[in-house]
Length: 85
Image (cartoon, rainbow, N blue to C red; front, side, top):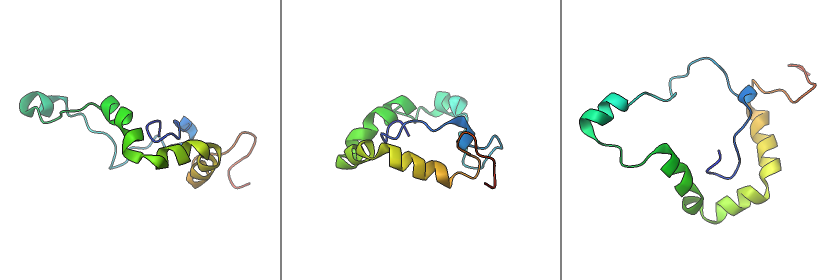
C-alpha cells in the first residue's frame, strides 16, 4: 500500500487468521537456489515509477480511496461505530 501511494492501512482492517496467500518463509530455498534478485523493499521503492501517472492520481485522491478500501474490509469499523451499525 505504501508503494502504491495509499499508505498502510490500520491493523484493524485485517484479520489475524492465517490465509492461504500469506507470506512464506523462503530463507532456506533462497540460500540453496539464490533465485531472488530483489528484496521486498526494492519492490516497494520501484512501484511508484511502475505505476506512472496512476501513482500521482492515487496520491491526489488518497483520502477517498483509503475510505473506499477500508469500507471493503469486513473487519474494520471506524472509531465509535460498532459492527452492524
